[in-house]
Length: 282
Ligand code: NAD
Image (cartoon, rainbow, N blue to C red; front, side):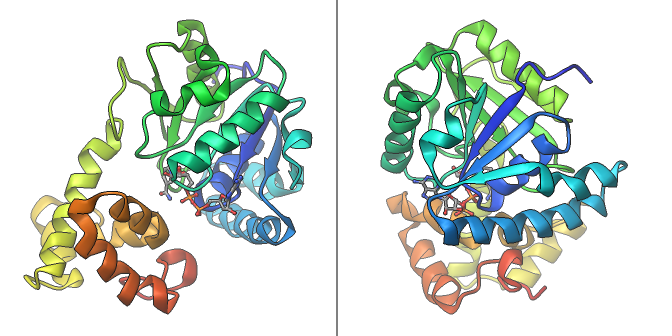
């Protein structure tokens, strides 16, 4: 594993992915600060760090690094304080373009000029955010997959403005924190992973809302016929139904699916694995 080119890393948003990213980085050496909007959000983030630390420790070869990682993560609800010494900022705030642009404008004003910026956005192009950062040459996407410690791909995707040396450093960083870096040669909505996954999950949603088959049957078909370990609704539960809803409601073609998810799942507090129930009970 190469040494990390960034000694101090700040993660923005301690949700499902941000807490996993913070944990993964802290387990590999760099100093980590994690930011969320207020004390209540940080408290929820603490809970996620503890839960993911236990989950990761049960699945990796060096459990101690993950067990002790939460204790090495500094938490802050003051954005300027969180980024003022960062070498790298990784953003994992909710998947809404205007929110991300607003957060990046604030980070751009508060972070040192040399700090490199990365977004973990799943479905937004970094070029739609780049100018808001004030430093498009130092901005790119670094996209992790859920259960970062085991599903350890990190897609590195710059815009036309990203400096190649910046992308190289972020690739080395990804390798230094135990990831398999996937370098994209150009911008692609959904990167490699979601270019495959989102149409697949969308097709499953369509089968469900059209009443063709239930989630268990659809998942069983996929697992048995392809040898895949999980079906689409098992994947939905792991991704989290809030993220699924955010993606569905951003696309008018999936309005029926968005309404279905809201009525039958979100409004009932069923958010997937994280809440103990989604399409399945955990
Ligand atoms: P989430 O809703 O679980 O977490 C979002 C976090 O951001 C929450 O803790 C929230 O309090 C915080 N937040 C809200 N407003 C904020 C602000 N202004 N500044 C800082 N933090 C703020 O969402 P998530 O699933 O972790 O997704 C976060 C990002 O990661 C999204 O861009 C998503 O596309 C991407 N992503 C998600 C997955 C996944 O499987 N869930 C996978 C890869 C990438």
